Image 1 (cartoon, protein in one colour):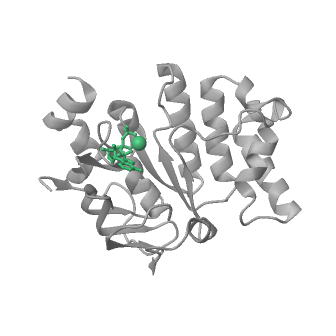
Image 2 (cartoon, rainbow, N blue to C red):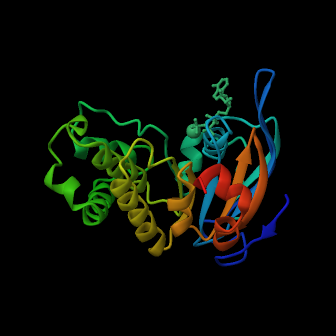
Length: 252
Ligand SMILES: Nc1ncnc2c1ncn2[C@@H]1O[C@H](COP(=O)(O)OP(=O)(O)OP(=O)(O)O)[C@@H](O)[C@H]1O
Ligand SMILES: [Mg+2]
């Protein structure tokens, strides 16, 4: 790391929603997709992971979520080692991922898509109904359209649905993989504003973004990933003011 002007949020990495990734390496066959990646999300923080196409952001998210096994390294959540746990177990502990590309069921209703987000570990009807209420409160448009097919909504609304589905798991840590992809600037602002509101309720957020300037408006801290390795970390202000970040990701 060249820069470690860190810690905009709370300190301590074993409270609720705390993630610690240590020296994680992931391979796809011979190809090394992540090389000794170490990153922390402290309770209550929004941490942004910046990086170009193919840097390895989604690979890291899938590895944290238990969808991809690291060849070495450790992932701890709330102080507990979760390396190599399967995805259902990781969700059950309070880590939910909103995957890149949304992964909705376009022909199913909005409400059915939401209920599927709760399916794995909240089978009780009261829990599901409570979750729906919370999501509808955050996104009133989803309540209005709850019986419509998910695929009938705009891209921005579908992104809200994808986030809402992840929230159905009542996560303490939300992994948001490029939520602004393909959305118009105004809608990007809305998605990030919702992310800020979710964080304000106490949920930690790890946000992968290429849209660095917008993401850094809401993030406490961030990391830059290049070719599978972290090359820079810093506070919101340090990254916004960093020349390399500005020229590579902000276009200044
Ligand atoms: N299942 C896979 N098998 C082989 N290689 C893969 C696989 N998934 C991703 N890769 C490769 O690993 C590298 C990292 O990909 P990854 O999707 O993690 O990057 P990313 O930062 O999320 O990119 P983007 O911004 O385009 O989403 C890329 O070179 C990609 O081609
Ligand atoms: Mg990706």
